[in-house]
Length: 183
Image 1: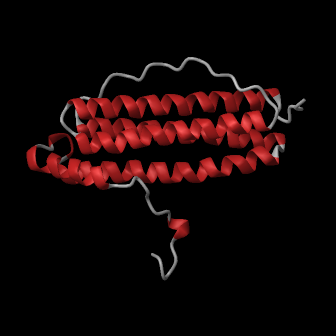
Image 2: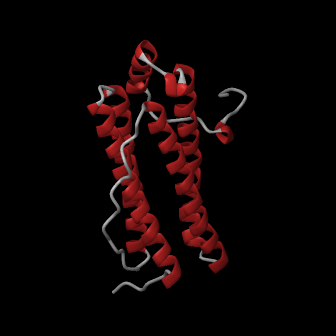
Image 3: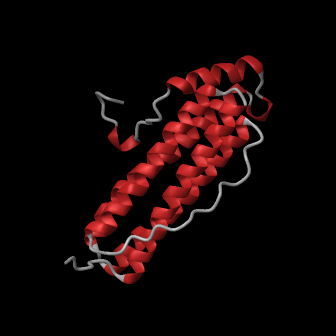
């Protein structure tokens, strides 16, 4: 028999974050399908990989909740918002979503700190670091589309962007990991 080691409030917050991660996966999946339908197979591939990554984040939280002896609640997730209207708009939506997700994670981190639940606070540090990477990646995408012409990007620029993102891993180096030998 497991003993619940999460407060009711923190358990609810973690379950809510788990649902947000599932929703993030659906959003990326939706944007990937939109990109593919519009002939951007490289961008679609990139976004499909991110959909899988977001699902892994959901699973990480689910496992943590269960390992702490609390009840994981799997609920319906909202449908993704409307499809993007352009590649620029797609990346703007990705950026906004990542900022919203970061703010949500910060709320759960603060809650763990206030409750002095150090196990949960420590667990959430992985997500804090991950969100730095996600925001940096969203900035990278915004920079790429800006270089391609932003909302006015057309033809060769979009073609090259699509090809570049097809090969991009989605990994962005973090400033805290830089050294003089590995800038």
